[in-house]
Image (cartoon, rainbow, N blue to C red; front, side):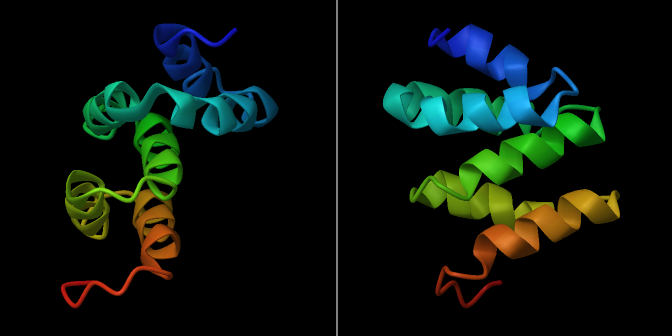
Length: 95
């Protein structure tokens, strides 16, 4: 399974092994994956937002950086933690 919609669905599967496998395959979809992850990062479901930020950690693009910065202010602590971990290796003064 390598179709982008299927990979995004796997992120929301509530199965960490399946979601992590999908994360590794998403990079082959380039900007399409970025846009899908940015949408997922706005989900009402905290687990979806967490996985979106987990995936965006591997995307070096200004839009990904902006979303990770926004994630630092999420209402869910686990999502804030995912954002902080993703930003740890990025030299962003705003972080």
